[in-house]
Picture 1 (cartoon, rainbow, N blue to C red):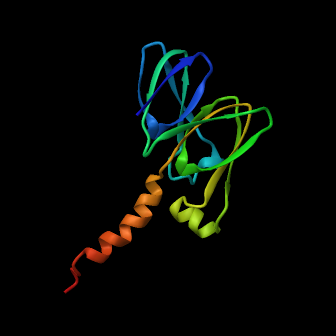
Picture 2 (cartoon, helix red, strand yellow; picture 1 turned 180 degrees about the vertical axis):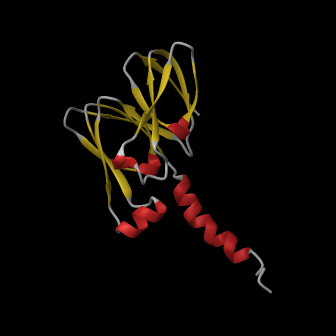
Length: 144
């Protein structure tokens, strides 16, 4: 869990990371657009505005990064938690088209400052990628 105080500047939050907020925070859903359509995190981001307390969750620790004007950072989409609304961003594939379309893997987001970015140290996609073969290997063969 990560608690932060919003002071009025809008923050874009991955929908799965939002936990709670004080009454003064307005929460609006915002369609991510075609550029995030295949991201495994989903189609929606939340736009959080106002002054008050916001509570986010993550898989792993949350790290805050501050970008200077024009500074760029590339983040795997599975590690992005939130970012200031004024930050420029674009999503792109870094792997093959097949892996991007069918698994959501291979997508990164390029963020351009100035502004704040919140990232998580772990990715649920990476855990599932590792865990699924482990579980399948230990499951008895039910076809007999």
